Amino acid sequence: MAEMTIRPARSLQGAVVLPGDKSISHRALMLSAISDGGSTISGLSAARDVASTRGCIEALGVGIEGDRDRIRISGVGLHGLRPPAAPLDAGNSGTTLRLMAGLLAAQPFETVIDGDSSLRRRPMRRIIEPLEAMGARIEGVNLRAPLTIHGGPLHAVDYASPVASAQVKSCILLAGLYARGVTRVTEPHSSRDHTERMLAEFGVRVQSRTGMAGLGRVNRLEAADIDVPGDLSAAAFFIAAACMLPGSSIEMDNVGVNATRTGFIETLSSMGACLSQDRATVRSNEPRARLTALSSSLRAVQISGSMIPRIIDEIPVLAVAASQADGATVIRDAAELRVKESDRIATVCANLKKMGAKIRETRDGMVIRGPVRLQGAEIDCHGDHRIAMAFAVAALAASSETRLVGTECVDISFPGFFQILESLRRD
Image 1 (cartoon, rainbow, N blue to C red):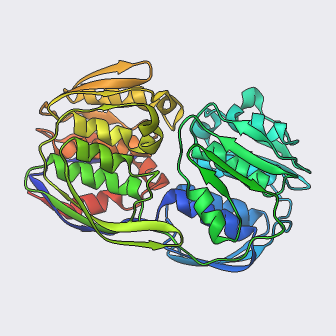
Image 2 (image 1 turned 60 degrees about the vertical axis):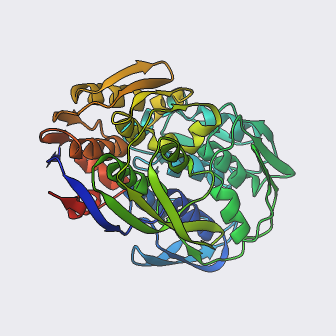
């Protein structure tokens, strides 16, 4: 198990080149695979999760050439996927498993898709039920991976999802490409809309309004060249660190600023963070901009309701920043954090308590009182990449060294994270 010792930093200064957006990279790979003709993806994420998606579509008979930053995919069309010779391996990636399940449910063959021990613990009922309502047959012990998917003809469904989840929505929409009729998904709050935006790039007409997305069966997807923006969820760690440390300034160009993802920026801004955007543009139907984060005096906020789906991945590092904010920050309606790579409510609270923070765990969130000078500690990353990176940020603001245990998990989403963080250090 890898370990990393992180010393406190006086400040952080410099420019960061971010990895490609992980969520968009998954979708670019999958839609290119079932399109007609060759598609080029630039800026593809080098994350291990994305490599899992690439491995799955290659195992289904799709040809891919090129390196991590620029690849060429020879699409096989909607009906060109082939039965894999062995179970598909989604690794640690819930996005890979859930979205691939939508595609596989419509194929005229049986597929087994599995993942690592962490992914096997994550709930799959949320995709099994709507896919079976569309006519698929899916088997899984206790409704968890490994899943055996008996694909075949599908019919449309009008599905009211009990959770705001881009993975659930995207799974159903991908199955809907093959389904007879018009498939619709409604959510209690709007989730990320990367799938809807990218489907349009591949020539698919998508109905979309607040809390709803729908489409009809299509005959083909047109090949497209996709430019992936920098990952805002990766940027969040550097933004939080810059805000927390005196005299800091960090700049990041070409960052995806899709409105369904900018809850972290909006929340930190409401806390008094010094953040700015410029060089705004749109490519591949995704807005992006240059972000600059400066040292800030933060104040507490309350976060709940429709904001939660827009900030769900950033809550661990937001909690770290809240430990340095004046007042009591309250996070509610975030029970979804309990079924991520770890129980992120429990792990954030336990680790911040080790570092001396004033934090209280609740059923669906937490309460953090600040500001508190954090102390160095030994932190268990629990195999969770976002916990590891959030507490690397906390370690920079601590009074003494912090030892992170289990840091190999960071490669799941952000290879090279620690090297970039170290390059920004000013002691």
